[in-house]
Image (cartoon, rainbow, N blue to C red; front, side):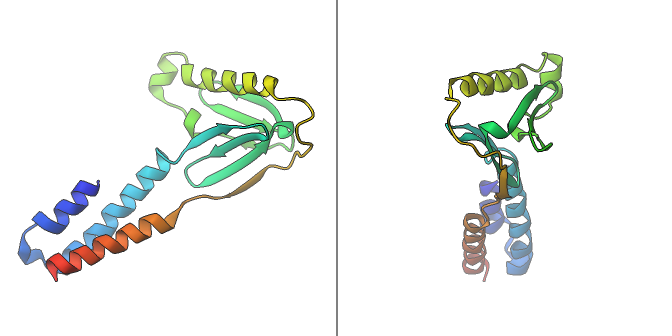
Length: 156
């Protein structure tokens, strides 16, 4: 996607000018940001204190004592003692996975169960699930500003 943005800046016809390219570059950059949030950004972290679940836009910290059970099927679902159902994006539904019997979802739930057994019972007493918006706009806005500046220099 960065290559497409650079191509728009340097190799589109000169008669299109700054304003045309300056409108397209942010649109392409927004698509790139969304793709990054949906793929690279998502993760599931296992630690002594609990699960760290980062979905597309939101990050949850789930202590081990807050987990009621882990459901594995078409997708992985973490059921908490307060009734929440948190679906990690890394264990999301896919047609290819369903045709193969959902091996990714089974592997994720098995790894969580194994790690949970290895954690001592006296670790933490909290059952409070915390969450926050997690979209990291500053690096992408800084890069966008750089691309618009580059557009102004090349097309100005």
